[in-house]
Length: 250
Ligand code: FPP
Image (cartoon, rainbow, N blue to C red; front, top):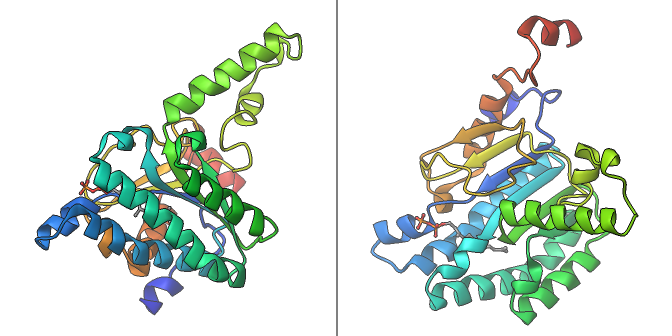
C-alpha cells in the first residue's frame, strides 16, 4: 500500500471527496447475517476513509449516511441506523478532537429523532473550531428536496424585495443550499458496483469525477480509497475547455 500511496501526486488531489457508502446489506447477507450487521461493520470503513483523507490532506469528506428514501426501510433498520449514529458520534468525539476533525451535517435534520438531532448539534458545536478536515454526514438527505428548498427560499426573498431576480446566479444558489459552507465535489466514490448517483449532491457534482468500485462498503479500506484517488489523478478535468487549453494553463 505504501508504494501506491507514494504514487499519489500531492499537487493534484481532490479537495472534496463525496462517498455513497453502498452494499452494507449485501455484505451482511453474504455472511448469513441480518442487514444491520452490515451497518455496524460499516463504521471501520468510515474510520479508515477519514484517516486516509486526513493523511492525504483532503480537506472535505462527505458521506451519504441516510437518504430521504431510507425512511421507507423497515423500522428496525431505521432505528438501528439512528442509534448507531448517536452512539458512534458520542464515542468518537475524543478522536474528532484529537484528529482536529470538524463535524458537519446536511439534509432535512428536523426529520431526525430528537436524540439524534441533539447529539449531532452538540458534536457540531464542540468540533466547530477544528480545521484539519470537515467531515460531513448527509442525513435524511435528498438533493432534489435541497434544490426545491433553495428555490423556495429565493422566491421568498424576491417576493419580500430582499433579492432581485437578475441577481440570482450560481453563487447565490450555492449560498442557499445545505452545502453553503462546502466547495463543489471533485470526486464521488460509490461502492458495491452500483453506477448511479441516487439523488446525492446533484448540483454540487456538476463537474465531479465519478468512481465506481465493486467493493462492498464494509470491506472498503484505505487502499481502496487510495485507488480511487489515483484513478482520479489519471483523468483530465476539462470543465468544458479543450485538452490543449488545460495543458497550457497547467
Ligand atoms: C447503504 O447500504 C448504507 C446505508 C443506507 C447506511 C450507511 C450508514 C451508516 C453505516 C451509519 C452512519 C453512521 C454515522 C456515524 C453517521 P445498503 O443498506 O443500501 O446496502 P445494500 O444495497 O447491500 O442493501
